[in-house]
Image (cartoon, rainbow, N blue to C red):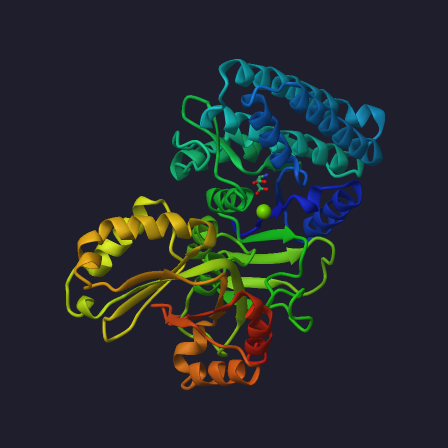
Length: 468
Ligand code: ASP
Ligand code: MG
């Protein structure tokens, strides 16, 4: 409904009492403008990792580590609760947290006995983070005089049974969302919903994948027909570059869906495209905002409208990559070499970040994560044993560690000479480019440079950025 706002708060935004105070203030301010506000929360920062580490230790035969971790989690949640809510107001949350940590203990025991944790068990264990943070945030809102109610999204988000990466059934979810949330909204309460989790139709808990609470925000935004979805994080929206590398990096006020997809693919820590597509397609407004600077710069994500202004918008470096090159004059015109190459790579389970082939067809080069290089080279030597023996392929070589520097901007395709500008900026910075590929969408250009040149390359290209 056009009067509905969904706000998602990430791990650092619920990671401490001061952060949750910010959340409370932001929610109070939002309520002044929006009759219906839904809050989605992540687990407190680091908690999902801690829970999964406990499960892994249990699977390895150790129960003392998970028990110690449970005590740390209990202490952290309770201390935060104490800072935010009085004894009486905190009682419900404390009981839920105790119950969940008891369950965590029992599950880790079972995992140790079995000697393994199934994906299904891991999802239940991982779900505890959000199931603890939601009651905690609810208590804080109630204590601040904002009536709120915790909602376990396992009751609402209906998914398939693909554990650790479940997909929602949107129709079933929309029906449940109305059933569970409408009465709360009608009673003037803010639903505080667990991000990240759902359940199968039979009620078994699933998760939407790591970082899945952004996906939850999109799911609830679509299910409730929200006018806007705001993702609250700990940086000023999406930046033109990593500010640790480029001090003058700034917030992009607007970014298209395709641009954000390219950035996510090349390792920038932004919204995962899969998770936000539903909201963007519905043309609901999607914002990325900073919990710790609520009135500061923010980014609006818009659909691809073909009218993207500007040229270079953002530049990222994707590190730890190695270039593999297949070379040989005998490759010329032989059909199927590329298909066999990438089939062999796929068999090793390696994902390829970038491909480029010389037009002479005498070489194919592509980029894989360095730790996979040895396995990929072996797979290729196997696949092309005959061609290597016949010298149709002369060599299969790998480069030292490199970085893929990706320049993103939907407007680049309407801007002649942009590649030339990028190359002269790199040339002036003394950066050598080992390989280049243009994204088929023409919304990105990727360049491979030596690992040691990555920062200089990002800074050089950043001089071409236009944000308006
Ligand atoms: N807590 C989950 C994770 O750490 C989901 C999220 O924070 O988005 O992956
Ligand atoms: Mg996240």
